[in-house]
Length: 140
Image (cartoon, rainbow, N blue to C red; front, side):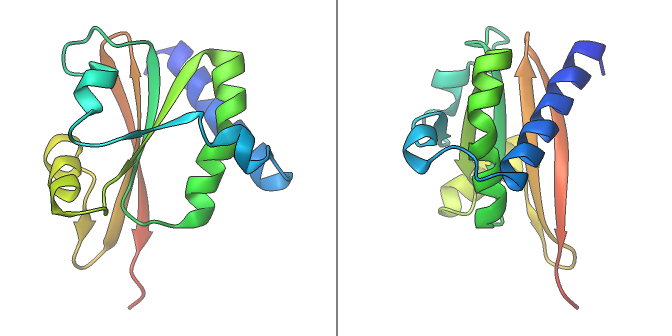
């Protein structure tokens, strides 16, 4: 992965750590900073498939609905937007069957029967996707 994208990833991890370690911004401040994406508006807003993206996007494909993870992503928004000019998006992959299919088919964000959920964070930058999987194992 190119050095510039490693820097963006480190910025994201740092912003999450700061958000977890501190009170973070208020809910009102962060509500409008993360764009809710769906199977219906994803391509229109991000233009990810064409490579003519509408800026650099960091998208969280959420299968687990763990509030702490979603909140950390939201808390990181001001730093990522202001310092790195990144647009943040959130896809609720567990919302309904259409969203689950969209997430699994196009982005391989899925829930495995044996191993649990595999959330995904993707950075769409200059026509390329850089993806990281977040595994959450089921209790045996």
